[in-house]
Structure formats: C-alpha cells, structure tokens
Image 1 (tube, rainbow, N blue to C red):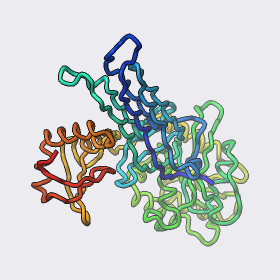
Image 2: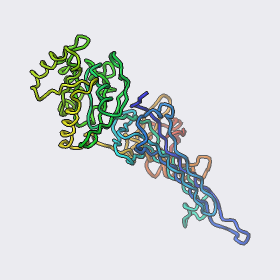
Image 3: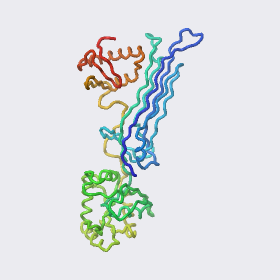
Image 4: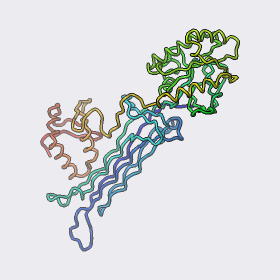
Length: 427
C-alpha cells in the first residue's frame, strides 16, 4: 500500500555522564582530579535517498532513537561520542511539527538532510571544575538529554506532469500506454487508489515524469472521498494533463466534468488552477465520443483539445510532443512557498532565559530550557552537586521568581522530571 503520511517520534541520544575521579599513583600522594567528560549523544538525521519511494516503513518503525554517548573515565579520558542515526526518506518529503503542523523542512533533492533531533552534549568530569578555590571538586555533570519530539512526515510526489480527471476517465490506461508504468486497470470507478509514477521517453524529447493522480470527486477540496490525500500530489507538478471521458460513459457530461475538476483544484489551492493544462478528450474509439469532443472544442477551441484513445494509442504522440514542448519553456518545480523554520534543540515557546511558572493541581511546574537542562545534568545523589545547583538557582534569582509567583515554603515544585520542596532561604 502507498503510504504518504507518517507520524514518528525522534529522540537524540543522551550525552554520557562526566565522572568524579582523582589521579592515583604509587608515588603521588595527593593526585589531582582527572575525571573525563562524557561523550556526545547521536543526532537523528533524516536524509533523502533515491531508493525510497514511500513512507511505508514508518508504519512499523515509528520510534527513532539515537545512541547515547559513553561515560567519561579516569585519567582525563573522554567517553566516546555516539554515531548519528541516519534515516532514509523519499524525495518530496515535508517534515512538520506534529503538535502545531508547522513546516520545519522540505526535503526534495538526493542527499539533502535535516537534523530532526539533536544529541545531548556530554557531561563535564570533575577535572573541568577544578579552580583555585576548589582544587579537588567532588562532583561532575550528568550528560545532557537529547532533544525529542513528534514529527509528521508528508510525502508529495515529485513529477513534471500531473494526470487528473474524474474516476474512470482512463488515466491509468493512458499512463500505461505512454510509459513503462503498469498501474492496475479495470472497468469500474476508483480502480486507482494510490498515485502512480511513470517516466515518458519519446523520441527526440527529454524524458519527463507523469503522476497518475487517482480520480477526484465533487467535494474533494473538503477532503471528501480521498480528496486531500490525492490533491497534495498535484501541488509540485509544473503542468497538468486533464483527461476527459469524451464518450460520457456512465451518463457523464464531458464539459461538466472538466469544469467540476477545475473548480475542485481552485478551491483546494488557487495555484493549481493556474497551472498550464493540456485537455485530452479520451475514449475516441467509442462512437458517442464525437459529440463530447465537439462540446469541448466549442468551449476551448479546436486547438485546445487533443482527441485520443488510450486503448488504441491513437493521438497519444501528439499529446506527448506538445507536453514536452511546454515543459521546455516552464521553470523547474521549486520548493514550497511556506517559510522553512529549522528545528532547534531548545524548548519552543520560551526563550533560553524565560521561565513559565504554572500551578498544576497541588504542585507548581516550572518550564524553561536552560533551567530544565541544568536540572537534567545535575547529579542529585551527590551532595556537592546539589549545593552547586542551589547556588546557581539563587544566583539567577530563581528563588525570588518562585516567591513572586506565589510559591510558599513547603510547596512542591517540579522542574523537568525532578520534584523539590520549596524552602526559601535554607541551604
């Protein structure tokens, strides 16, 4: 099954912990601190690969986690950094924040990459804290947690030409005759449930890619049927081949069908309605198609309609050469007009210094990127590290900010995954 949307969880690797260690040697009575730093956690990196064509793999592999860095060692030896987790995705994939659906990156070219989640830096060993005031520090940092979030991946097929029309207009048959694609073809509506790609190679023209977009219905722009699932694939094309059932099989009106599809395109995205269109009157092998062709030519002019039979192949060459000529004059498909906002390994919604203090039930919750990072990297099982945290907390004026927000002695305060009992003025 063709899968063009996926929701994934990405988690950068945690940094390795720094270590508390002192130099020990038979002839050195008081060796100094030599605890090494932890290694850096791996990033989760999305990379465009030519071998990928769908997002099918992510239905079964939804959680992507990079490895954590190794812990530091004595002798000032730094832990080894983890390798990045490289994840292959198909060209044409857009990456969005799952909560806000804000566009983060549009990945279209082979080799293009996006760091979806950054690994945390390694914690500093006690050798890094040595100073003239404390020559034998007995604390080290824990590794920084890696960034994490949920992302939406949305694949939009990249094709030069989009093949549109009502169900059963003959698009799959048309594609099978002009390319090596072999879509499923049958004599009933909605045979095609997934977009198909075909490469057209005609003598004397540059090859181009055609996407057979499954048949649209009235209300497709509202998502009726599978409207949104299919219309998104037309967005990247440079030109549209609008296939119309000139024979009016199933009692359809060719002219009405033409206007209805164009209306759906315009309501979904006005840019689609402005794309160049080549109108093709199909099923000319049927006797009743002549009347439908006449209606279309009265509306668009004799030169504005190409009569063909996808079944017999009649008229297909003229369409292909005309399309190839138009493509030579049209600019290459560009990226989306939406602004790209690259993912930062910081909590969104607050700046690095800003704190958000909110009461949730019986406790106060404090959110702030730098503070949460400090909490995560503090070893609260180490009394020296705890006292250092308290000094930093007060030095930044955080104690006063909590009091101003209504936090009183004895209240429970949660920062990240750690809960505290607030006792102002005590050490």
